[in-house]
Image 1 (tube, rainbow, N blue to C red):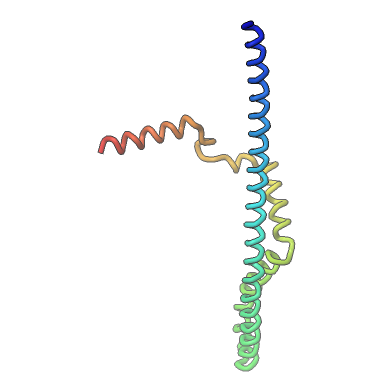
Image 2 (cartoon, rainbow, N blue to C red; image 1 turned 90 degrees about the vertical axis):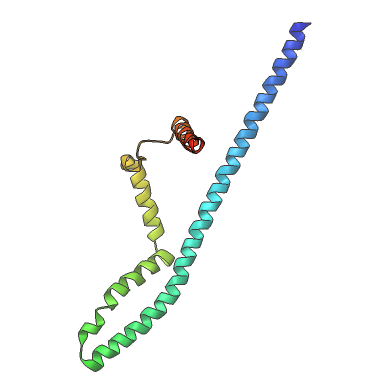
Length: 147
């Protein structure tokens, strides 16, 4: 009789473990999908911000370029055109970020760093562990208790 009861309990426990495993896997998949969705939305916002900034900066650059060029011609001072050089770099960067291939190049460089320069990604004092967190928590709680 005990054997039948034990066998039933083992089957029940096994099906419960399978259910828990399936449930935790489903939860992990949902978390991964949610994190990816959040990452994609953040990148889309960053690109959208770049495009919006480009509109305003492009207008500013255009007005400044016309004004400085007119001033340089009218005053016969070619030095007035010099501020257009750094402004042109900013304009080119914003265009590349919003409409160009900067994101793809950055992704490629990030993949290269992950593959070939892993040591540069290490945290100071290594990865945070449960033990190090507990030690810090105990020290902090002693600090508050002593007061």
